[in-house]
Length: 354
Length: 183
Image (cartoon, rainbow over all chains, first blue to last red; front, side, top):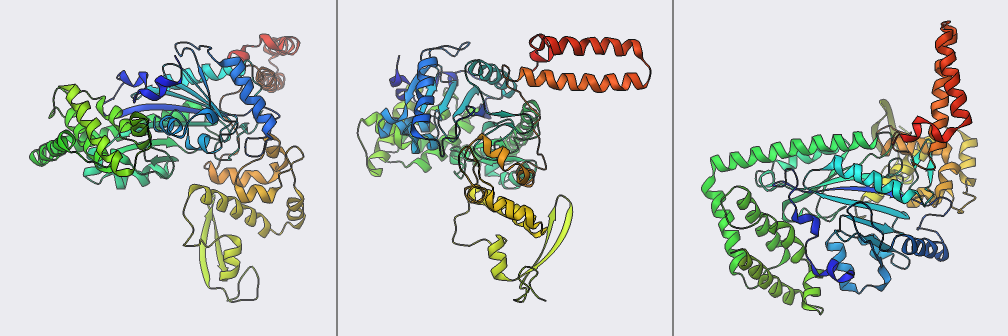
C-alpha cells in the first residue's frame, strides 16, 4: 500500500465504524504538540536541522506499527502534487500549515488513517489521533501510549514548570488540543446555536467550523475544542470537553424532537427537497451541496429517509471538496466544471445506496 | 483631564479594565491608546493571532506602567542565547523561537500565560515517561521529605523511619521508583 489509497478513498477506514453518539458526534480527535529538545522550533530553525528531523522520522518510523495502527506511511509533503496536498487537507490528515511550509515537512500516517503525525509543522511533532463518535477518553489513552512510544527514541523539549514547550504560547503545558466534530442541524435551524456558542467560549472552549480556525460551519458541522492547555491535566480537559459535548448532544436531541412535534411537515418538506436536489441536480456548488447533505443526514437520523446509510454525510462532505473532485477528474477544473462533476458524483453515490 | 500616559494631550478615551479581579480606570489620549494597543484598527482582519499578539503587547505595557524601569531596560536587551530571538520579536510575532526562549523570557511570561490560560502559569499534566523519571523521582522525594519533617515534629518516629528508608531507596535506585509508572 502507498499514498494512493489515502488519496483515492474519500473517507478514512476508521470512519466506517459507528462510535458512541454517532448520530450527532462524527469524530473525536486528540492532538499533542511536541518538540525535539535542543533544536529551535521550525519557525526559525535551520534547513539542515529540520531536514535531520525529517530524515530521523523516515528512518525510524516508516513502515513501523503501533498497536492496531499499522504500517506507517512516511510522506514528504514536497513530493506531493498540489491536488494530493489538497486532498490530504480535506481529509484532515494534514493541516494547511504543513502544506504552506512544506520544504522539510512530512506526515506519518497509519494505514487505518487513525494516527497522523505531522513533522515540522508549527512544532516539530504534532500527533493527531482520531476515533469515530464520542470517545475522547479512549483516544487520549491511545494518544498517550503512542506519545510514550515516540518518546522512547526522541528527547522532548519539556520543562518542569511549563510542561511541554511549544512554539505558540497558547499550546504550552499539555500541548493538547482535544476536539469533537458535531453535526448540529436542529440547533442551527432553531438558531439556538448562536446563544450556545458564546456560553461555551466563556468556559475556555471554542466552537469553530469544520476546517478549523476562522472557517465557517459548513454543512452544520461544528468543531468544539479546548483552548486552555496550561494548568489543567489532560484528563480534566478531556472530561470537561466531554461534558460540554454531552450537553450539546442533549440540546440537539431536544431541538430535534421539538421540531418533529411542532413542524414535522415543514421539516419533512425541507429534508425531501434537499434529497431531491442531491438526486436530480446537474450543477451544484459546495455550499448548496453541504446544506442539502446536512438536511438529508438529519432525515436519516430522524427516520424520515430510510435505506440510506449515515456514513453518507462523512463521505460526501469530503467527496464534494475541490481537491477531491480534481483528483477524481485527474485534471484541474474550473469552478463551473467542479459544480457539474460534484452533481454527478453525488447522484452516483445516492444511486449506490438504492 | 490629561492623558495618564503622556501627560500632554487631553484624554479622550476612558475605560475600566478588570485584570484578575482588580479594577483599573484608564484615561488616555488616542495616540497613546494606539501605542499601547488599546485601540484596534478597523481595517485589520480580526484573527486569533492578532488577539494573541495584542494580548502579549498589552501585558508587557502593563508591566512597563508599573514603572519598573530596570525591568523595562532588561526586557529591551532580553535575547535568547540559543536562537537569538529578542523579547520584542516574540511580542511582535507571538511565537517562541526555541525551548530556551521560555527560560530567557521567564520573568515576563507569567502575565501572558495567565491571560491565555485562564490564570494558570504552571503545568499540571503528563510528564515524559522516559526522561521524566528523574523528575518524578525528585518530586516524590521532595514530598516524602516534607512528610518526614511533619512526622518528626509530631514525634511519630516509627513512621518517620519508614519514610526515611523510602527516601534512601529512591535516592539510591531512582529507576525503580513507583512514581516512574505514573503518567
